[in-house]
Length: 271
Image 1 (cartoon, one colour):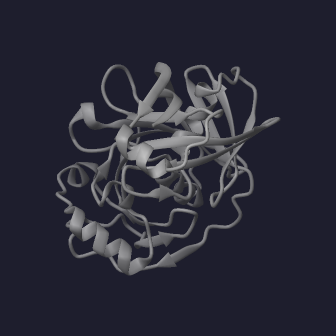
Image 2 (cartoon, rainbow, N blue to C red; image 1 turned 60 degrees about the vertical axis):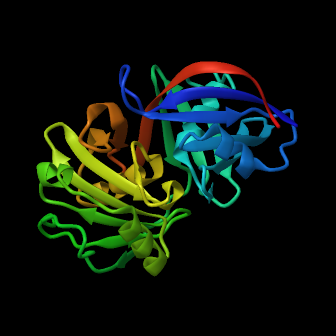
Image 3 (cartoon, rainbow, N blue to C red; image 1 turned 90 degrees about the horizontal axis):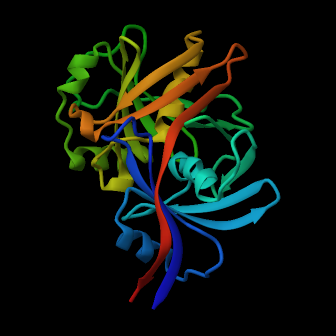
């Protein structure tokens, strides 16, 4: 029997609908099979706190089907789960991911890469199963990072909403390109509309994906855009969407933000 002390909440929600349920397994108990525990929790992402040393937090994150080299969703949730006071900054890293600096600002937790470096971009072909018009002057690219993704920038948000993407096509594309997901984005009235399909959900659509949206923000910053942008991610149904925030600073830094809502904390035993 495995007993874990865990925090359960929602990340990237706005009001009662949307966002992603998230679990943070708190330190104190050695978990032998983290993948099995994450599969039993069956939320999009389960983060395991593997160390807390001063202002540094280390994590490992699992979806129900795979380990994630990097996960902003659990990184944001970890500050609330561990009770880090508002305004205090923490360095959060996954064993194979980029290091992030995080802090809570009111209802929103913000993350930025501490050493983003230059964008590692590869030009690729537009997948024939994505029946959408490309945005003018922007071709499909692969953004190489801890979790690399194919980014398609589309001309019309309504056209993007109407797309029907098969999980099998996403998995074939990711296997062929050595990536972990497909990211579609388009300008919207108050910011950006984004849809993300990921290997961590067996090719299905994710309601909210911090790392993918951070990548969209870095591509948007290349165009000279600055300021705060609202991001709506997910299917057309509002209750299945995530609400994320991008902050593109005058120096070209890109921050990713989202709300973190605590639902419960307690001990759970798995047989």
